[in-house]
Length: 126
Image (cartoon, rainbow, N blue to C red):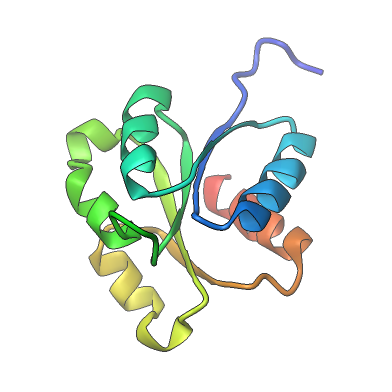
């Protein structure tokens, strides 16, 4: 393993423990550093302190929603983070609306195949 290579940093912001746990488990297996936040407010704070390469952001959460978190992260404080929005309510979401918010991708929950989710993430950050 190449120690000179910086590990990918991922922040998972979701109010569902099962979603956070399953994503964290599989992303840790990829050798990535993973932080979790249980809601939008904590997500906002961790985004600023952890400075992740990728943020997996739930749309609907108590407190700040995913879109509100995005609005609060100015591009200059956001850094080069890629953002994937996630929601079980897919009717309101499409890739165009996702990009308008400044996110890179939208994923529907629940994930049918968590390994497919990892493949999508790897393609995005490649």
